[in-house]
Amino acid sequence: MTQDFLPRGNIVDVGEHKIHYLSYGEGDAVVLLHGSGPGASGYSNFKQNIDAIVDTGRRAIVFDMIGFGYSSKPTGRDYTTELFASTITDALAGIGVERCVLVGNSLGGAVSIRIAIDTPNLVDGLVLMAPGGIETSEVYYNMPGIKSMIAGFVGGTLDFEGLRALLEMLVQDTAFVDDQLVAERLAILETQPVEVLSRLVVANMEDELDKLQCPIMGFWGQNDRFTPVSGFNKIINANQNCVFTIVSNCGHWVMVERAAMFNNHLQQFLNSLPQR
Image (cartoon, rainbow, N blue to C red; front, side, top):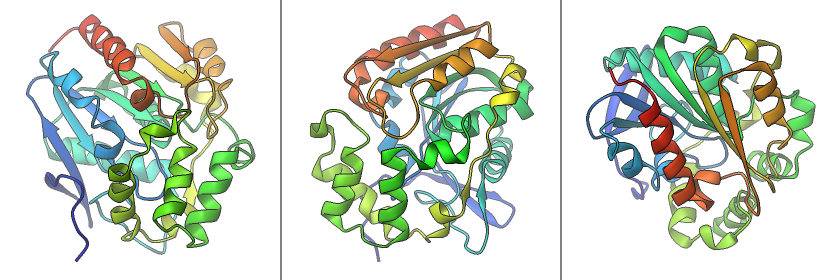
């Protein structure tokens, strides 16, 4: 049996799938959706940000999206934006969440955008960190971080040190990739089928960005090697109620490398929204 390096929370059934989530605090829901990659999980992405949400009097719900963490990892199918979005919205309905703020990094940002477009009455606000889903596949697959991630995971070459090297591409300061983080990710990686990345299909939603109706706050690390920093322009140009912060000397994980700054801005954003 694989050792648990991550906390176990609750399971909600979504059709034939089981979606794992952690819940902290009470009040209006803030839903955190992690990025992709070998061994990814909600807790590993957001463990430095949970307390900041709870301190605003809100409930932090940290999901493992399908194919990741302790959630179901089906084989023999594509992992599409629509699959991620529908399983999260069904999971939210299953646990009784009718309104929320979505916080999404990378793939989780793309899924957050999809949910906000498709179910605007569910989403009170969006917080996006280097979101995917706004470029063509060719653009993403030419990014150095994506190339390394696909080659290592699909090729089955990621041992402890190989995974460490990949995770170090997510940050500008490699000190943030410690043994605990690598162990957390490796334990999940050992349970992931190759389809999670080899059949990952994230549609380009650039032409739909003007359908977003809620306030948006975003961040991008200037040294991001997974998603083009220029993508912030597409979101700002399509939405009037939107602000992005470009962070110098920072990679793909703004909420990790600049946790204090990110948490401060997140709290201000949450406090600007009406509580229900």
